[in-house]
Length: 205
Image (cartoon, rainbow, N blue to C red; front, side, top):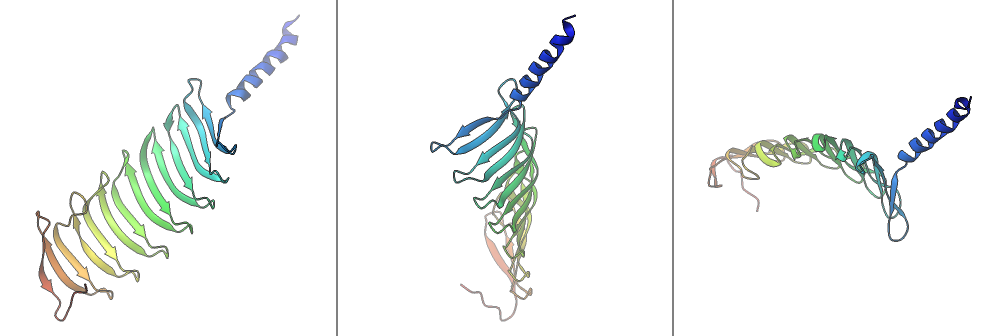
């Protein structure tokens, strides 16, 4: 009856094999400090958690892979340990929220990726939390309504972009109190002409 005595040995081999498969590959900087921890599948492709460290120590990047393709949330970190950005991946492509932070931890950019490009509403904030601008993006380019704000939260500019940072159609300008002071019309030749100006308003150079 040798089977019962062989079973524990076989079980031990299975456990050891499983443990070795779950160990990450490690890379190092030339100076010897740990640089990366990478988990692989049986084909040698990145699979599972991926960690990258700053030369000075501390986390620089945290991500996850599924058989060679990034999947899940990728996070980048400042040397201080504060998060620098976070983006969502789905099956190897950027799809989902994209956020960038100031070194202080305050939100700088709040946007959405679709099929590896920024799409939809893009918001940028000042470090004090006030809104700086809101832009509509299509495949990474400005295309659609936009608004710019003063630091006090009042509207500064309001208009529409087309094919990048090019105004088209009605463009409105406001002073720092939120009062509209000028209206312009922008044509397809990228020329904006003033069609109305508040009485007494003088442009500052």
